Length: 231
Image 1 (tube, rainbow, N blue to C red):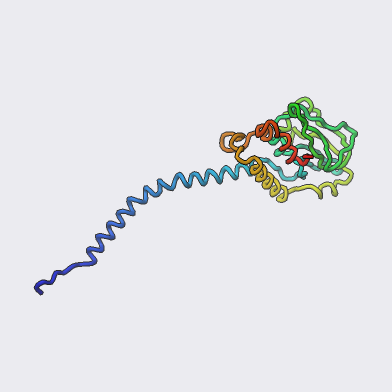
Image 2 (tube, one colour):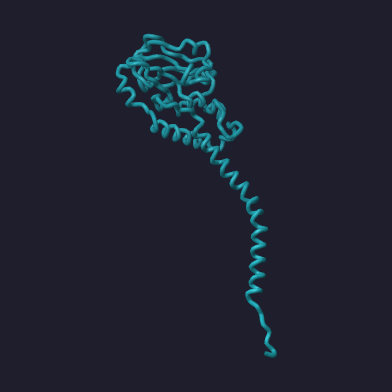
């Protein structure tokens, strides 16, 4: 028919579809490149958060006092006592550890020993009530043992508790202890606030001796707050 021009709309649409598909094929690699830093950043943050939460070692089978001391049953009558990983990393290296004498008596929740940090003394609370039957003599020669191996060679004393069953009921263990430590780590991050970066080592983890590095004038107060001996 004269004056009539046939137009194949499917052919014209096909060209548009090809252009769109071509554009998407070109855009896809750039989109992947753009997303890599974001994904990497998110994963880095997640890894850092997980690392900080797991930075404080908390072995199973021990009982923990909220003042950051621990207790380990030794046979039917005795318990071994020490400082947990959080406490030693909080206060850092001790020049001296003042332990009670053999034969003396300690009380659960009362000051059991002192950490001599420079010119300051940090009180720590006993996790048990009973009589001291032995102390770790190696600690007197090498206080760094509590930093190197707080749950092993860095143990402090052996105690004969008045009532072992009643003692452990007031302490934390298992999943309850893990949840408590996670919350403690969160509280520490909040407490340190923007100063976290100042006292962080490579990888975003806090340095040992956090309290001391955080503020020379107030680190002992911070340590006392977390060790429950703040006045």
